[in-house]
Length: 112
Length: 113
Image (tube, each protein chain N blue to C red):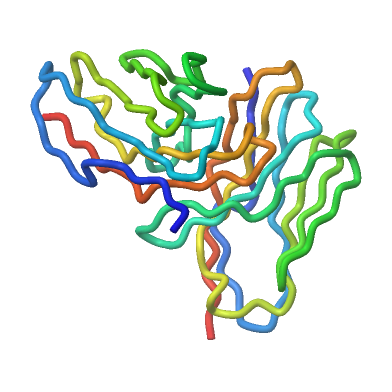
């Protein structure tokens, strides 16, 4: 059974600080995705990582993928309140199937 | 405006009464998918479709049916709903698969009594 684990599950950080969210998965895959969900809202695609060593950046967020370690990181630089949300990673199997397995999410709260 | 539209947004119903949640996208996307979101479990995929008349099971398909007769529509059918299907449901679409950014609907909150 594929497992996707995120750490931490809850994160409270001050504005201006840096932090990293981790996503570990249990199967061979070189396709990993990050999503954001604001409280009470739907999800928004953030990053699509399609190969080992892939790095994507958007504003204060940077995502990377290490397929050998089965690990993706979402790094937050100089956090601002607007980044408060729940962040999900998701993996799809490398078998040609197109179904996704999500982590349980990391709820980030940025304190002014 | 590019969007994925789900209806209804909220529904309270009773066990065993068949219901359908509709999902429609206006972006000519090939890939569509249904997820349920439960506290502490994140999102779990129910069914997905790569194109018209092509559907496949996700992680938790039991108790659900889908159809893809037209490219734009991907309804989720609960033939005999049960309380354990009480959840928040999201429909999503992307150009050609999960490796493309997915666009999500606003969600449907189902309560099965």
